[in-house]
Length: 332
Image (cartoon, rainbow, N blue to C red; front, side, top):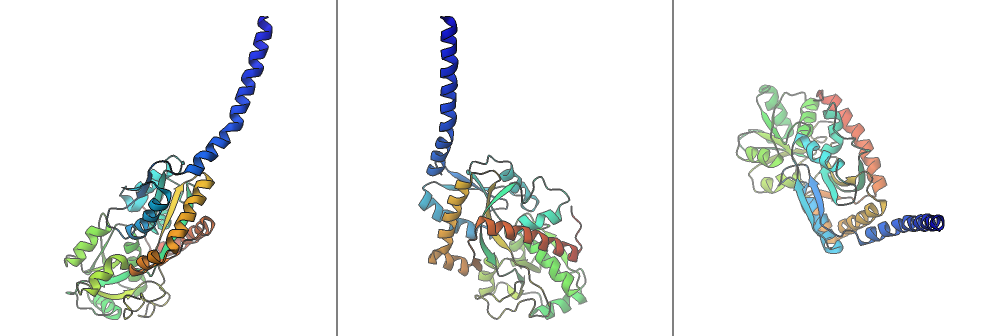
């Protein structure tokens, strides 16, 4: 009798375990279908007030409306974005931690000897939100230079004396300015800050003469006469400043360096969640009001697929490596 009961228990217990195993994917699918069921943490690896916030908030605000959950910004600053980026790489891959950052993500593999994460394999690409027109060379009005040509001549006359601000080594403003100096054959003094806002404020105050800054930040101050724009680093002029030439037009033949903003999950995030978020990003970027808002801030909408974005990331890593070699910067 005891043997019969034991056999029955074994068969019944195995049967229940098998049934539970079959039911697990259904439960997981159901959770994915309901995603998100709680707030999503959006890690921005730079300080508040950076140009990243413009596309990030434009897209996440739309997703708050369509997905019905808050997207809460978490600023994890330091080391050109690597501290916040590592936090996302190590986060649970459940769709509730997201990274939104800029081209420093693909530049950092060339600026650091060893990163605490793999730029490609530790992340799941969602979408490239936008691309930029390139950074603007802006100077304080007290500097007697009204064109790229005049700025270069002044820098040659004052080697190592003209200062330029950046958000830190390896940040887009630093990379753009270092490439500009290398191609122009001039020696500028780099003044790195802990964030774009503090760097830009010192240029506005005249404490630092120049910065190769994001148009998102700089254009309003140029239009107000508080800064002078001399040139832009991308392949085309920015609509808000049609009289400001590209560096290429100003004599630095072949200069073409733009930035971008994009979104990632930690690697291993369920494909269904990635697809769902990507679909919402594409819808948000396609809205006329979003496109106008991005354009008004000097950004060109993209809204690529995860596959397209991943291909772009790999190509930009190689491009950034070539820039690092050209400017002769030693990895830290």
